[in-house]
Amino acid sequence: MSSKPRLFSGIQPSANSLQIGNYIGAIVQWKELQASHDAIFCIVDLHAITVQQDPTQLRENTRRTAAQYIAAGIDPAASTLFVQSHVPAHPELAWILNTITGFGEASRMTQFKDKSARQGADSTTVGLFAYPTLMAADILLYQAAVVPVGDDQRQHVELTRDLAGRFNSRFGDTFAIPEARIQRETARIYDLQEPTSKMSKSASSEAGVVWLLDEPTVTAKKIKSAVTDADNDVRFDPESKPGISNLLTIYSVLAGESIASLEAEFGSRGYGNFKTKLADVVVATFAPIRERTLELLADPAELDRVLAGNADRAAEIANRTLATVYDRIGLLHKA
Ligand code: AMP
Ligand code: TRP
Image 1 (cartoon, rainbow, N blue to C red):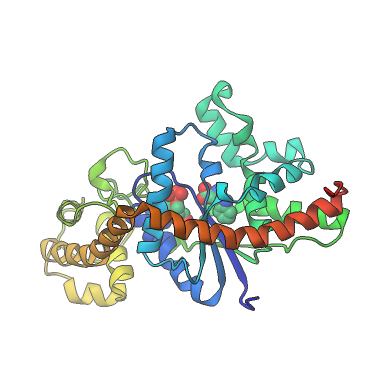
Image 2: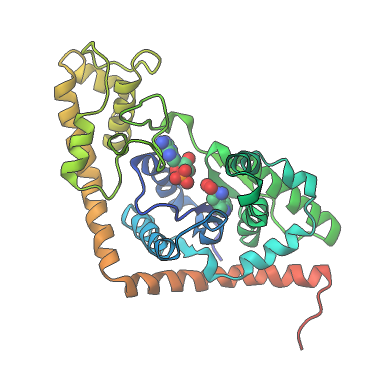
């Protein structure tokens, strides 16, 4: 067994391409963490179906999501990258957790309240309501110590801790209590056309979102047409210069240069020059990731084989925890 602390995180296969905010806000840190942790990354297709999905697209997006994470540097030999529905222990433990979760407790989850309010009661499903207990099962099956997530998932990790503690005190020590590791606010990337809103897979305008799988010419064009203010000074000031500040953040993370040194280098030489250089940096980062993703997708059988091997590795850990749980709560062993 590895002596490194175990890390677990989940990714929804909710689009056919990631955007560069996902890369800068999440993948960059996951790549750093995978060396020092026993890292498990799960493509949570059973969570994705809590809102309606097209079956053909869901299957395709699941492969594409896996391919992009591998291409971006999540190493499926060092970390465990697998598809949630390949390990039946996830919904099995989720059911058990449902039986120790209060109805009121689940009703207080703000993500459920927001999503169900947006959809209306008639199209809100029991699955959406139970989303957080499935997420708790994901984490607890692996005895994860660390759970890197965005701020919006903090409450779900809190619930996971409560459920783990409740189960342990009722049935004996079974689960490790996980810690959320909230993703740094500073790495928040904004829409290129609307630099006060977060870059998102569900943005209104295509021009504001750089997709990992955009062709390099498209990426360069989007960077060069990013909205910036009228004065021509390359200076970090998110309040009054959100557009250029966002571009400075992207440059700084991708090139590994400090914002101060970028200000010194580009300062008064105008936005055009800065944007051209940034377009080169962005293309240099993402063109190889895009190519590698397309290569992986060109051989779906091999990709599926890697995912199956990783699912077997995950299942071994998960089934051990689930067997202990079944035993503790008094389910009869099958002879
Ligand atoms: P999502 O695509 O919303 O499921 O997000 C997946 C991961 O990417 C989460 O950890 C988010 O916090 C992160 N992420 C998404 N959009 C951005 C963004 N614009 N800036 C920084 N991080 C982001
Ligand atoms: N709910 C998370 C999100 O939307 C995804 C997720 C599912 C997850 N299971 C998880 C994240 C377990 C961390 C750990 O971002």
